[in-house]
Amino acid sequence: MPEIKLESNFKYKPFDLSQNWEDETHFAYFFCLKTEVIGFALIESNKKINTVLEFFVLASYQGKGFGKAAARNIFKAFDGYWNVSQIEKNQPALAFWRKTISDITNGGMEEVYENRTYVQKFHTSSIV
Image 1: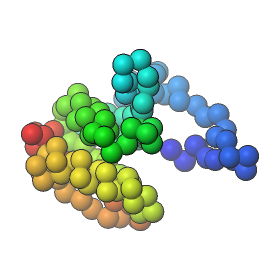
Image 2: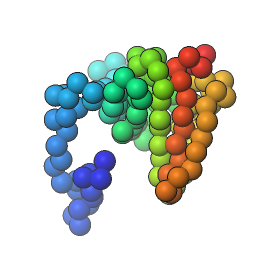
Image 3: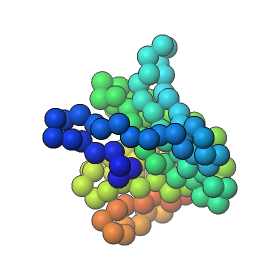
Image 4: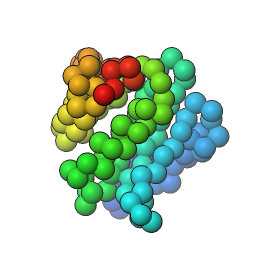
């Protein structure tokens, strides 16, 4: 989300997330482990294509399968085509999504590179 920027004091300036609660095509999910929120996802679904807008897991929970489990649950919740994108410079996200989507779809994804962005494309029918 371009409006989310780190300021000179290393804090994020407040930004408007109201569309994720008010717009019928946007959805917000929090990932919890017992009573602790360990991550979140912002999804856009317009009935033709589903898109991961933001996806975050706390560093202390990364690499332990929580992100993959959350992604699988979100993909299953929205039937149809998906696009998941990462900017070229975000190699950790690229590695996570390539492996996660490939594992979840048993390799049933396509990846394209355009405008310094990688996009994984797949359909929920390929989820195993």
